[in-house]
Image 1 (cartoon, rainbow, N blue to C red):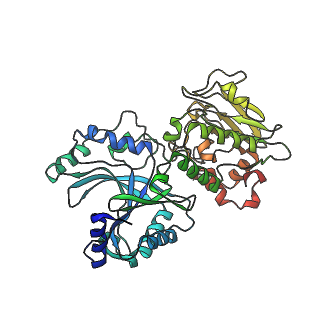
Image 2 (cartoon, rainbow, N blue to C red):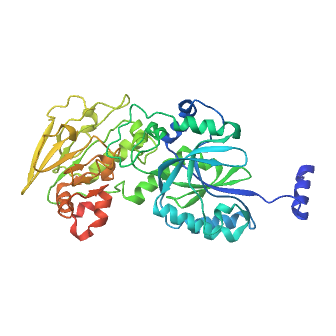
Length: 447
């Protein structure tokens, strides 16, 4: 094979050891429209445009130089990942960092326990392979995870940029809810829910370019071309939902007939995927999964108390088109985004033995001093401190779809969960509630 002079020189340089080994960086690349929009808007908010910005990522390890070939790196990273389906983090404080080429203004990240444990494993399995790495990643690892709003800010501009960042006033659209401590003003412009950000892929950068990317849900390595393929991203999300039980594969109808609850499907509403960090790639995929989940759980003789906001957005179909595809007898409590629907009411009271439930879309509109529980939607996962799945202090139950894993919950199961809740306790999601209660104590439809 004719390699040409350039190829022969490169081959000889490897043989005699004059060409440097490849430098690597391990990144988590993720999709989050809210953080991406904040990074784009940040220079305007601060009134300065010095520095650079790149696509969303979190540096996990590196830069480093490996003493082994690339195949060994792939194997070690797979060992570190194990059976993880995703990593999650929340945004934290505003921080300033200084590098060799300039400063960075960033949001610190608060990783979940699995994320933190994964980093420790990564340090453990990669360190023996490194010829050289930064002090940050020397065992046991001292990395501060962050997302840069701006980096490589010239040192001459850095202090002024930081002062202007601290001087940003909070967004007039921000509603603090029950936040116990102040947050950076710049974070009030982050138009997203209170749920953590999910990471589904781990990328290896080699000599500054994407080399391979590991898909956590699918447990497979992707090439550079595959990593950018929208169809591959759809498979990533689908596999994640299936692994987490967010997508029912078959009918789970109960016998005898039961009553169910859910709210805020927002069918046809593409932006809800971004606002509420729903694990879907497109509105069409979301609609198909939500409708299938409903029909796999709800039989023709079941009743559903639906608490509003069935569909929304300019691309949504009329409500009747969606209702015609949903099983069961539906008692519709109207939401703020709903069109006029025949038979819909603004609120409803249910009695289950000695317990009363007040069903309404927006809890702010509930009757004052109601003696039972207020079941509502409207808040999605936007303020989990004030409106978690169960807030025993305020006697509210948030059944927005995001908190129910996008599958209607039976009132029978809810009754059992409420019997286990302590006064003043808060439980973020239905999954958290189920994790606390032995499966044998729950109805079959919850499994």
